[in-house]
Every structure is written in C-alpha cells, then in structure tokens.
Image (cartoon, rainbow, N blue to C red; front, side, top):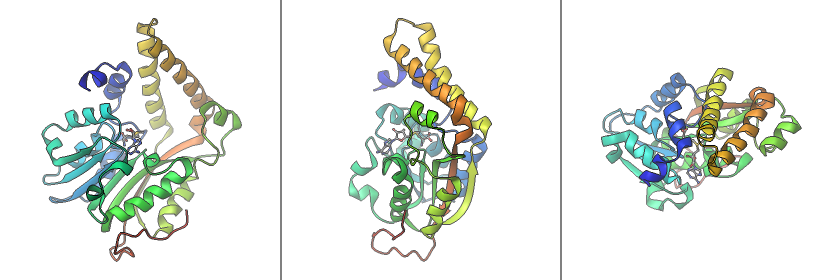
Length: 271
Ligand SMILES: C[S@@+](CC[C@H](N)C(=O)[O-])C[C@H]1O[C@@H](n2cnc3c(N)ncnc32)[C@H](O)[C@@H]1O
C-alpha cells in the first residue's frame, strides 16, 4: 500500500498543497476542532477521515481516543503516517461506515463526531446530509458534539454547470435549508462557517495543479492524461459557474443533554 500511495503523483501533490480534502480554511478547521470540547478520555469519531489531519489536530489533546473510518486505503495509510505515535490511539477502519463492526459503532459511544465532506458515506446526494445527522445523533452521547461539512447552493445552478459536472439540481439545498435540517432534529447550532471564494480558489487551484503537472511532465502517461482532461472540464465549469454557485459550510451542532434517544433508536425528523 505504501507504494500505491507514494507513487500516485496526484495524491502526493494534493498532500503537499493541502492538509485536507475540503475547501475550509485553516482557522475554521482549528475552530471546529476546538468546539469538539475534547478532554482526556473523550472518544471521537471521524467518518470519511481521509488523510487524517483533523484527527491529528484533535489528538493533540492528551488522552483522547478516536475511530477513523475511510474505505480509501491509501488515504488511511497517509493518515496513520501523519499521526505518528498518536495513531496508536485510533481504531482505524479501512471500509465504508456501513461495514464497521457493530461494537465499534454502538449507540451513544462517542463524545464527538466529524463528517467533513463525506456525507455520501451515509447516503447518496440529497439524502446524505439528513442521513448523516440521523446516524451521528445516534452514535453520540447526549450533549455530544458533531461537526458536519456539506455543500450548498449559493444560487440556483445553471443547466450548463449541471451538465458539465454531473451534479443534480436536487443534490444540494441552500445553506439555510442545511442548517434547518439540524435544527429540526433538535440539534443546537454551536458554530457555523462557510468557505470564502478565496478558500474555494485555493482548493480548486490545488486540485488543478495536482492533475495538470504530472501530465505536463509525462505526456506519455495515459492515466495522467485522462486525469488532466477530467480536471480541465471540472475547472472550466468551476470558473464559468461553480465559483458563484456551489458553497461549502461546516455545521457544528450539540445534542441536547436530555436526548430523546435512550435505546439507540433514531430520533424522528423529516428530511
Ligand atoms: C472529500 S473527502 C474528505 C476527507 C476528509 N474528511 C477531509 O476533510 O479531508 C471524502 C472522504 O470520504 C471517504 N468515503 C467515501 N465513502 C465512504 C464511506 N462509505 N464511509 C466512510 N468514508 C467514505 C472518501 O474515501 C474520502 O476520503
């Protein structure tokens, strides 16, 4: 696996350019981690942990333990390396969240949970955010904190943008509608932040360079050519429409202390 991750020039460039795979700025990420209220003994869950930088920052608090879930083995390998000794305080699951053994996803067994740009772990497209909020609400203890980051429509998407990217008009809600999903579930908003256009440009620019540079260096490499071509289409759509259209926000919610849940059943809330 080490060879697989280390030999992928796209991943290596992304890893060097950005510590995470989302368009949140560092100050926001640090604030999110601080709002998890981790203390020695806290148990943290990260669904779709990717290369593990949020776990790494969270585990700087001594005595915190964590569960990191991601089916991408190469990303998990990078996460383990990034955490170093702290990796021993993480239970790693190299699979989708649905395949994690039940004892490691028991109701009420976490104090805090992250799902940053990975709501598709729980359900596809529009159903991802409500499914994530429902699932994490069950996994957290009453009074626990969850941080979920998700896209939203800044404005109605142009048909050209949808055609170029394959995104569906109904795949996202507005920012206010995303927030309302949490509030309808009785979750208490603790911190909300959106990526700026500059944050997006930084993120998209990193992906673009990571895709185009390997192709420029090795034009004979078919995989690099295909990746560069795919990225050109995406970048063009981003510049023409996406920049003004698709937002990204992180929603940090606290569960009420007197949670309706007592037996692991999901709270009822319409999506
Ligand atoms: C956009 S990345 C975000 C990674 C990380 N949270 C971050 O912010 O850097 C989405 C991650 O979700 C992971 N993922 C995809 N399907 C998943 C599933 N069923 N269960 C858990 N993670 C999943 C992907 O492998 C990927 O690493």
